[in-house]
Length: 70
Image 1 (cartoon, rainbow, N blue to C red):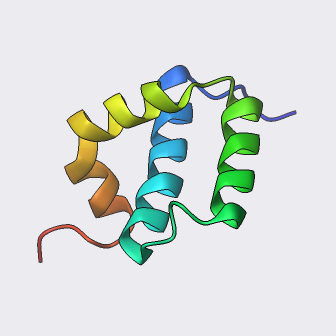
Image 2 (image 1 turned 180 degrees about the vertical axis):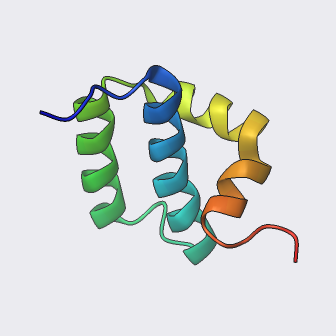
């Protein structure tokens, strides 16, 4: 059985998903909203928590998705 993710790992995962869709301009589309709501539910997170995490960890998230500084 896989180990449980820490809260920081959950926040990072959700932030990567959100940022990926933001960069594509799809964060307001119905498909994203449906998937994102399910991810938040499964990870036991609130959207506000992810937004706050992303605000303070944007550089690490962008690095993870290949959008960091060259």
